[in-house]
Length: 238
Image 1: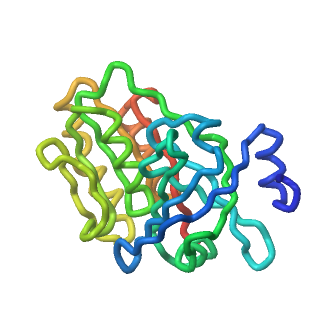
Image 2 (image 1 turned 45 degrees about the vertical axis):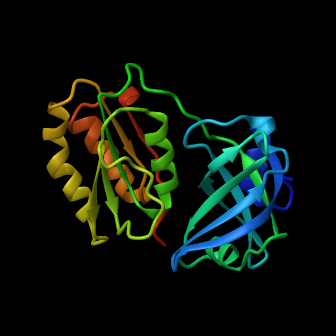
């Protein structure tokens, strides 16, 4: 399936990526700008297994050219061969496809590059930075790390979105999307919070530019070891 997808598809095939055809079974508008689609997996979960924050690359047509975007699996069920995906809707061919998707529609998915390593020792406190695009991954992360308390900086408003955190253990700090405000608020608060916990774990997943800025800050200025943090840009501003 790498043929016809340009260099991205060719590289993924050389890396032994696995391809599957997934079929929409249900579509739900969670909010006006957030849509959940449920799928049968075409054998994906049985072949690859499941891990926390697992994601797949979906392939879309973009004016006759292939275009891929990565999405975190929601409620994957290997026994049933089903999962859901949640789309933070904006402009672009992936969002256009998600808006129009109906039961019976299909999409190709590639599994390559996803993974998760449990921090060792287990976190005494989790510090996460994200936005609607990474909300499914944040939910998965907090579920996987068990009883650890967490502080989450969330760019945007959670109103109506599927936030699965436990308010007794998880504090969320909503930050308006205004220039560098997200990065500024994290840099202002994180140093003091890190000093108050022995085994922190820092997880950053927002737009690529902010992710790079905060990842560099956490590693170089705060001295957090690579094995105690994870950073991945979930989208790129056009």
